Length: 142
Image (cartoon, rainbow, N blue to C red):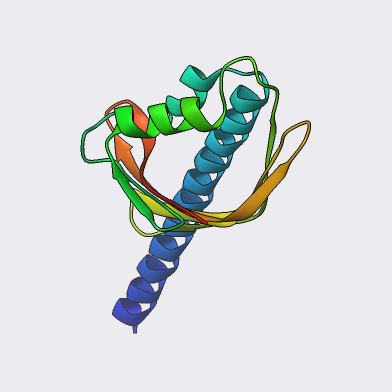
């Protein structure tokens, strides 16, 4: 009987610990998404891009296009949203799911408002915990 109680106690502790870690990871990723919107809205693309994995293996899917590499994605943003052109980014309906201690994903809606246009769609971003912290390793925005 003591073994059964001990095993149940260990199971409860393990579940509680995992839930606490998942909550912490979700909070960290939510902060990153908030920092990205703040950076974008202040016109600081370099700060916005800081949370993408700076690698040739970073992937971005948007519309019918597949792009690979951090430099390629940065150039895409610079071309689509030229420096000095005011735009406001918002994320909404965000759902963050933790897959493991080192992987998670976030999905939601995005909207970029320019003085004369509004672009909006859905996104899924996959995060990986790297040496420098959580980074987006794949972005699928439509």
